[in-house]
Image (cartoon, rainbow, N blue to C red):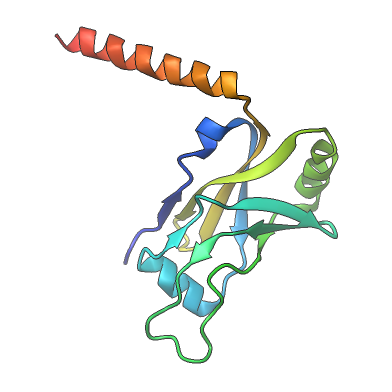
Length: 148
């Protein structure tokens, strides 16, 4: 059985990640089969609250090759499953200016259910991005020096 491990690598660079939550996701049969074949991406996706429910937008899941007319739309909104208390907490925090919800990882858990790790995040300014690039470079230089 294939393992699913979709990562949003740009999220750590573009956003300052704060609180994290683990959410289930509502998928159809062809979406799950396509994800198990490794045909998905969460790199451009984000989450929105609509009528007290959390949805993930722009999550790309390619159409299943053997899917017939029952095939799914590749970029439709998909519902995320969280507890009511977690949803209320997110709704309160989203009212702060500049906060958003970003998915970072989608994976298959031990019960063969697809889970999405989401983070409450604040967008970084340009100087913050430069700072994280400098930190990354200095860490790389120190690692090189230690190996010599």
